[in-house]
Image 1 (spheres, rainbow, N blue to C red):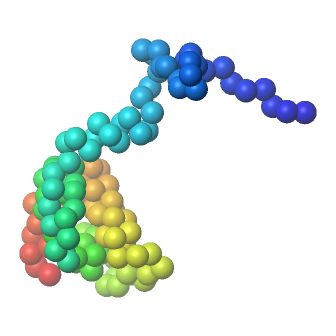
Image 2 (tube, rainbow, N blue to C red; image 1 turned 180 degrees about the horizontal axis):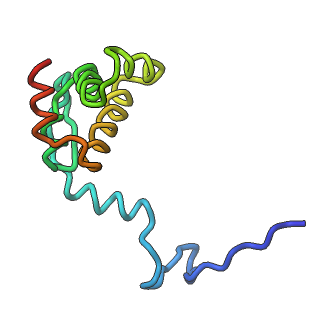
Length: 124
């Protein structure tokens, strides 16, 4: 027996869904809106990159994946090379993103400050 479809608070016209004011914007709409606020920067290899422009993203802009992994390891009191080993199956951009997310989580939890991150990064 087929499962019944959930009713959506939207009207379908010409195969396009018109959302009502109570509906949350789609992920595509949210990302399109967020991209308008991105800051353009250079990656560690010199190619163009973009970030959200906050203090942490600006600080980490242009850092190599190895530097971001090493910074995350020091701030989280992990063994040297532990994150590189854990994220070794990922491409360099994904390694950098995952390590950066760890740092962002520590800042959000107030375990470290952006100044702590800057000092650790400068000490590498």
